Length: 325
Image 1 (cartoon, helix red, strand yellow):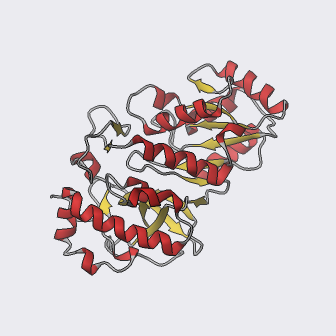
Image 2: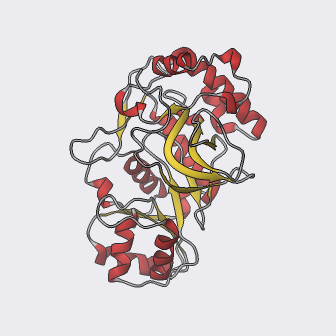
Image 3: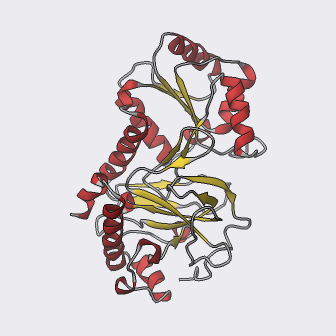
């Protein structure tokens, strides 16, 4: 089965072969994606490389049910949004695929989760239902098997005391938090951490003025007393995450790949080192859609690593003009 091959990819050739097979599978089994491909006159017989594959605009997750499986969803993850706004929904028919994706992805970049105490500072996500990030971090906390692992909302005194004690004991710690909460923490306390990975998940979520990533990372490096700030790149519509160990340079796990599209011609894939719209291939999305055109702007390096440079202006109305299926 295709699903069994996703987390066993060992080469670029194996990735490309499986991506083309999953494209054919989703073309045949995903009604929304099939309609989109038909409008582009893109049939599996026309698609010879991954660059030929059509990328579904991410906005479709707001207005359509994106499924490539006849199974009923066991959970529907939803994006955050302002009151009254339409949120994205990612209907997941097999949670074991998501769990394998984030556990194998974390292990690929950071080794076993059992090595870490996981401290999560994600108040904006905890305050709503349907967050795929909360599902992942909650499971990472459980899988770490450390009694000190856990979520923190507004109890900054408690997390500070615990973080300092753990770090000074030599215990490896993963502090994962939304940007505004990490800034709140260092405004009240200053740290000098030697055994802690500080990982931001992005976003001020309306709590603070948005600032560019280099400025954010500089503030966090100074506040936590660390040499690098790590980042996680994920979204409701994906079941995989890319990670940055510093300088905002992200790498994908072996079953995920990022490309960029021309901002003026959204169906045209660019070569490396050009700024464009980020397209993601996430093979873990086998039961929804693995080929997604996001609203993010980025730049890809020749080695496949990438930077996220911002978002499209008026992103809900720009991009591919075949939105009205």
